[in-house]
Structures are given as structure tokens and as C-alpha cells.
Length: 95
Image (cartoon, rainbow, N blue to C red):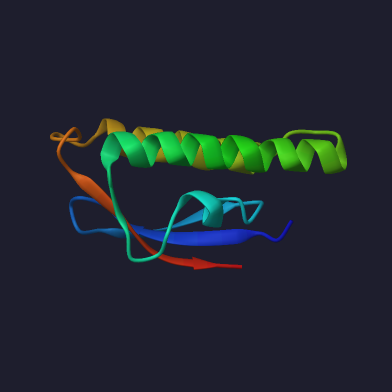
């Protein structure tokens, strides 16, 4: 369950490195692919919830860092003005 980072480009052009305690993000995101904001958010929720659940199965407690990352993603998306037509690009995934 290697820690994984993925870099995204937000609709405003800003790039951000995101965290997951598990490589599950590579199952849901593809480097070089752009996702409509609602699809990106759905994938991020699924990925980070699965990652947190993997941590819980292994260590007996959920991963608060995964949920914190999801909260930051949701907060960022909430600030987008045209989030139904905008896209978020997945640039890199590294372990």
C-alpha cells in the first residue's frame, strides 16, 4: 500500500500535488487525462475512501490524511465558478 501522489491542474491553471495513502488513485485516474469536474470529484471520493478503507483493514483505523485531502479537494471545487463545464487534468501519478 504505497503512498501515492498525483498532480492535477485545476481549471484556473494552478497545479497541485495531492496525496493518497494507497496507489488506488492509479486505478481511477490516468496521467494526461482531463476529467469534467463532477467526474473528477466522484473519482477522487471513490479513490480516497477506498484508500482510507485499505488503511483501516491493515491497521485498524481509517486514514485521516486521505479524508483531509478529500476535504481540501471538495473545498477547492466549491470555489470554482463554472464547475459543471470545467475540467481538471491529472498530470502525474507517483509512488
